[in-house]
Length: 91
Image 1: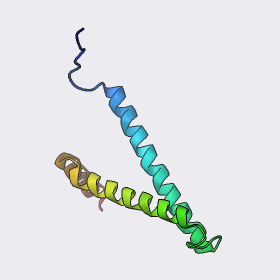
Image 2: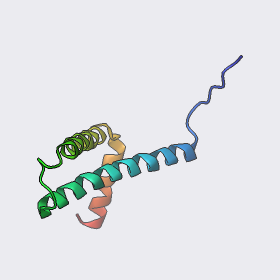
Image 3: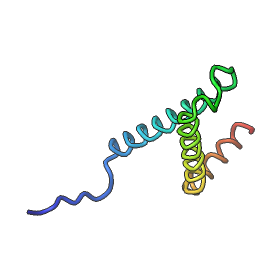
Image 4: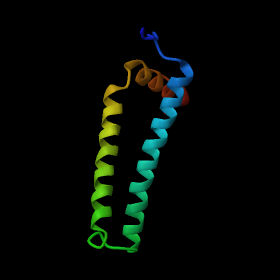
């Protein structure tokens, strides 16, 4: 039985993957921010919710790692294009 080899990505599949990825990381960021917000309000103590605290710390580390990875591996042309756009707007 042969295998189907597809060269390149379908534009819609690539866009859908980006949307899902961005949605996932936005959800992670929301969980971390909500936890910090309720912790700051005093709704619970970090010692009272030990498991939740550990999970949120792990999610926060994953989120920070993702941010650093994306910043480091973003193509140079995207960075240059954004800098050019900033120059156009006066920033």
